[in-house]
Image (cartoon, rainbow, N blue to C red; front, side, top):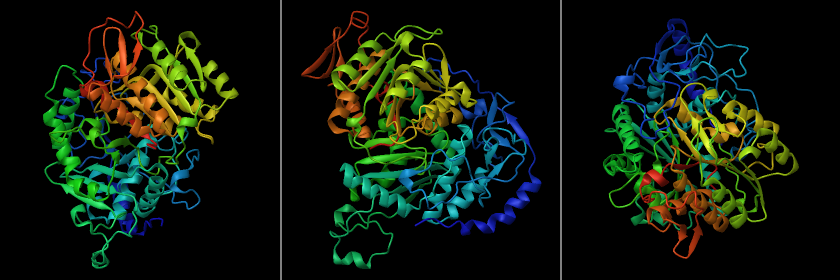
Length: 581
């Protein structure tokens, strides 16, 4: 069932007034476009100091992508407005087969979404200059029905990602019922029950919306027939009507509080010598997970898929803590830009061939990655065995990638090299190849030339040594939108640069599990738990994937400083983006 946007038509008068009255009041921020490579120094400073807060001036309009002429654009801008854009509501493309190549977006009726008069009509993306008035959005969102709220979040996410990625995103706008139905179909295939959770940071509260899969109704008692349609009852009563939206608000977690705690959490968890992250990890758990825990248990959910709002996308969600256990100990987790921007189709990835590439030597003043040859060799030859092709160091060029990709369809593209997701324009973010820095604009072009987004699609892109400017909206959009930009189903990447040894341990264990389960988020979960529990560990001479399975370390890696892989610094940075199946 597709959503109707008729409920938004009453706001046409409002948008006309706004179009006539608003003027450009661009406020320049102080955020540098250059990310400091030290993971403890890439945290965006307190909003009161850097003027980066989305809510410092609640009446201002937030710029999703700044004008190209302004390098240090604040997150807060009061732009001129013009006709806005939105996803079309096409019935021809079901949710799990969204047409990610289409370059057309229709005009919306949503008054919170505008486009700046400064938009360059000759720009490759008509989304440059898109702005969202969060005050209007918050008001509409709070007053919306459950289905309407989901539609509004999906619209906003698509526009934000489209603007940042210079991509016109076209696709179907699925209702919550469509999403629940798709989750139900995936549960039958994968035997894993996933729920989609939208986390939206409103000015005065935190909004949580959870969509579980539609479950069988055979087990419901006769009393359930008399229950209100959208009532969710504790699993202890065994009276649960699944597949309905669960909507909660957390009044304490207003946008100021959430951003403050999120900054504190990121700052502390990225310091492997600091264990005081527990306080903020627990606080975020209480705000994000606890309000939904009864419904999660009632629906027997084992996989949590999050679609996050601004400034929250770089939270290492796996490390949220309930006081006894980390979230990853109880659930597989994943991040999606939005449901409609995610290709959720299931494919047994165990059947995919892998193109394993890496750079171990220093290039363009990047730190060397001495564990890369062992990582590439172990993953491709020992775990994936005959289904592989390898490019190492000087062989890793765009020409060589194109040549191999033209000869064979690779389901997994593995890149053990530096990647940086920086503030500012998308061209600032890159993946390091031997001969050049491949920025995200070039990645998009390359993926289109190599037809990564055409069936059979590239199932997964793995980046084992990347980082992002934590807490910066533009950098977070670049990182969490990477699967959309690269035209692949999913991306495994790290929010901050984890040590060479730490990446080796997690990535190798991940592939070992993937070969067994063929499920992406669950394989990542098992690798993270292995590090947390000390089963995956590094000694002076060996990498232990389990007590029985060890890999000898080469001389250039052996005898390095001993590290404690159980700290979430080493395992919680790794995030599955996009298709989690």
